[in-house]
Each structure stands twice: as structure tokens, then as C-alpha cells.
Image 1 (cartoon, rainbow, N blue to C red):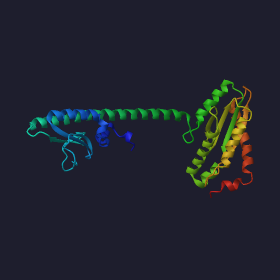
Image 2: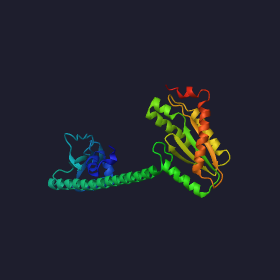
Image 3: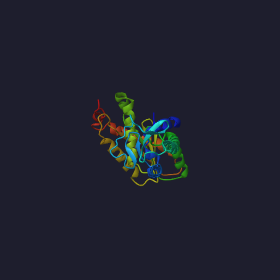
Image 4: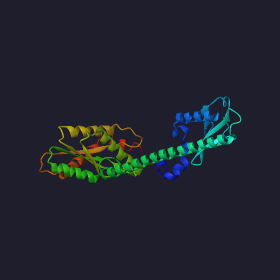
Length: 308
């Protein structure tokens, strides 16, 4: 269970064990207070942490003194029913009013406990609220992303890609490079290596596409092993160079099992009377021509089956 999912009440009860005195108090102010009280009562003070490490020493009475917080714990400073410190007191002048000393020292412990409790609750509540706000913000971000992104790859999902395609279509932008990128022999990988590896192949291809694309490219996963790409106002050779980089990256990819390969079809919308949807069909046709060339190239089958 993630810590931020633990209810606030339980956190408050348990997390005090992770707090040191310096997390709860301004130790300089505590020292000033104890120095004034020590002068008034003519006593010396030693304040340790929960483990007996010395935090504040007032007076010489504790020179060479090694606190044993187990057998001789002094007066315990407790918050949320847990000890976070120990206060030791030694009289400097005998004969002082012991009841007065006891009363003021106990009152000091009570004051420190109350101030520490307030500080602790304020800090824990603030941290908790920050974590809740962060979690809600992340959930909102994920929800927004999920409305646009394909979960497996991080590119646009089919619905959002088609909505962007419609916007570009209506805008009358020309030229638009329209690309269909299909993973070669994805089914072969799925049949021989299983779902995890075939999913990994899709992610590998998607990552290569994302690495090589420009910010203005519109990329979506439009079928299980198919990506669509739109390049509004494409420059001469821009889509072809993009395709070549992707295929080069796939061919040089090193992996014990996977041999990434993609077939790519490219067409252009050059007339506003043409629809991008029709051009997507044309790009798919060109992709199949490219696929035939790749799969019949020398060495393709050997590379594909290298992991068997």
C-alpha cells in the first residue's frame, strides 16, 4: 500500500515515530526557555531525543553523564502516546522547594507536549493535503490523457487521431503528408513469443516513431499494429526522410527476440477537395506495396526468426 493511501487518522497515530525534536520545535527557543527556567529554579537541564542522544544541555551537572533512557528515563516528553524525548533535572542549590520545582518542570513538559502536538498535527495535515491534491491532480491529468492517448504506446488513440484528422480536413490545409505505418509480422511475434513480447514490439515501434517525429506531427495508433501519421504543411521529402529514419532504426535495433520492421505508405493531400480519410486508404495501399518489398528482401525471414 502506498503511504499516501493510508488514512490521515492512522498516519497521525503512527508517523510520530519518524519525527525528531528538531522537526517539531525551534530548538533555540526551547533552549532559551529552559535556560531561563534553570536560572529561576537553580537547576540544570538535559534534554535528549527518544534514544538518549543529547540535544540541549544547560549547566555542568551532566558532564560525563550518559543517559539510560530505558532504565532511568528521566521525565518523558510524549506526543501521540509515544516518547519523543527525555528531560533530566538536577538541583544546583539544595533545599529548594521541591514541589515548586516539580510543578514547574511538569508544567514545562506539558507545554512542550502541547506545542509539539500542535506542530505535529499541523505538519502531518499539511503534508496529507498536499499529497491528496497531488493525487487528485494526477488522476485528472491521467483522465485527460486517457481521453487522447493510447494506453500502450502513449501516442494518440484512434478516436482522438480521427478527431484531429477531421480538424485538419476542415481547415483546408495543403499539402498534408498522410502515412500508414504497419508492423511487419506482428502476429508471428505474438504466436511464437506471446502477448508480452508482441506488446513490447508495439511499444518499441511507437517509441522509435516518437523519437523521430516533430512536435507538429499528428501520430495515432489506429489499429492493433498500425499507426497513422499526418504532417500538415509537409515540406518536400519530409515524410520520406521520416519514414527512412524509422525503418533504419528498426533494422539496427538490437534485441534477443525482437526484429522490428515496419512497412510504410505515404501519400499527399494536395487539393482541398480531397479528404484525408480517402488519403488514408491510399496510404494503406502504398504500405502494402512496401510490405511486399520488405518481406521478400534477402535476409528478412532469417532476421525475423532469430529469437526462435
